[in-house]
Length: 94
Image (cartoon, rainbow, N blue to C red; front, side, top):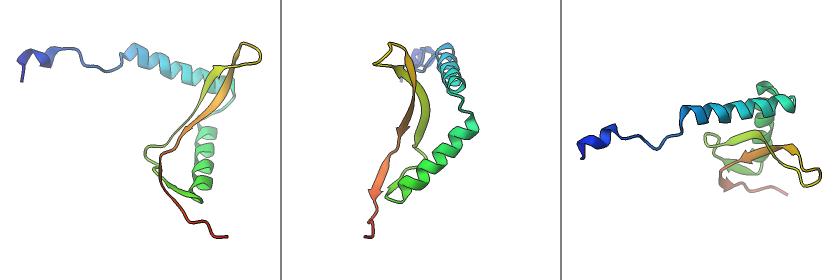
């Protein structure tokens, strides 16, 4: 192991960049009037419904509200982003 590699800068996001991303997230939530409690309730409801049909990895679940460019008026619009890892499908009874 190289002794000087210990002192090299790691490939982690700078705290300024991380703070900027967090601030963007807070501003988006504020603009769409979505508190952290509402987002948690939404997350719980989504998990409940999806769990009826498939087994999901709740620890790796990522649900957030972000913004994206609008195709209609050249502005930005809020978007619900959900990354839900699926472990397996459940058998649905007819």
